[in-house]
Length: 157
Image (cartoon, rainbow, N blue to C red; front, side, top):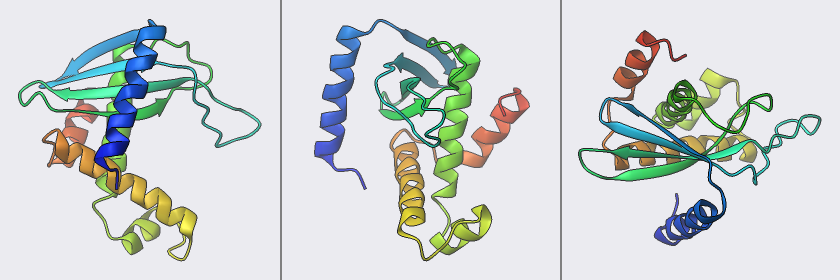
């Protein structure tokens, strides 16, 4: 669970990047403004053979409540740094898929995705999904399945 201090530190870090990098894209989906800020400064290393520094901060703002959240997102290593509107919708969909997974019990999560319910590493992955669920709730997203269905109907899969 993220603390208020963690969130403030993240906002400070994002503000610093905004002052040094000028690569921002945005789009809307329903009443959400989805913005991408390319940093290229944070490596995702799921595969040491193919390190990916194509990092973005994605900010989703509920335009009705004015509440917003931010999450990390890495595009394909083949993708240029600027995200298209469709890329932003896909990032939002990925976030929602993580969030809906955090609404399960840890045992069900492990059973559904082939994780080991006796693994600390797998527990951390599950906790990250729960953090995404908390963030979704912060911006007023409670019926994630409906949003995912709408995105699918618009070809965002």
